[in-house]
Length: 166
Image (cartoon, rainbow, N blue to C red; front, side, top):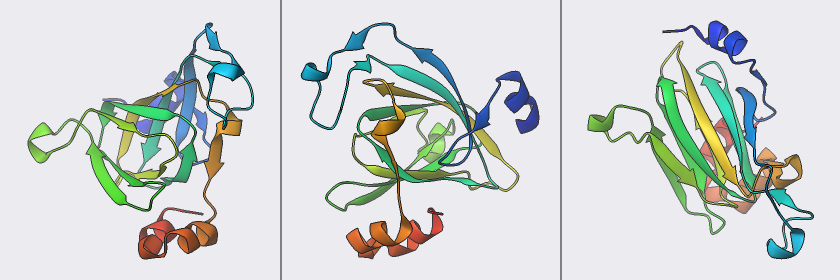
């Protein structure tokens, strides 16, 4: 098994604004015109984009949301605990990994407009996953949570929001 440092180098991963490391691996040439997209999109989008995403136990992926559904695909390492808060305020969590007997799943889709954050719970561990977004990702579709604003909106989830925001 590779170390996290070896994978960062081998896959040319860069720091991600939400935490962790990433590398875009695919951006479709085909695109969707603005008039065919919901109002939250200001311009055309590629049909789909994919990234490698590595998360380590010494950091977390902070609460954020995107305008699209985001599919997570587990590749290797420790499991990831993914936390979600729906637009209506319902909290849920799921483990993404390969230990099927413990209820982990190798693939999961976060619905559009859900706030979500992720962490590797095992000490000194890391996870390598892929994330696929459709319509394709653009940074204007991304919103990083501000702790106080998210806590004000969802006060009953204040503890997990505090833990997984910067």
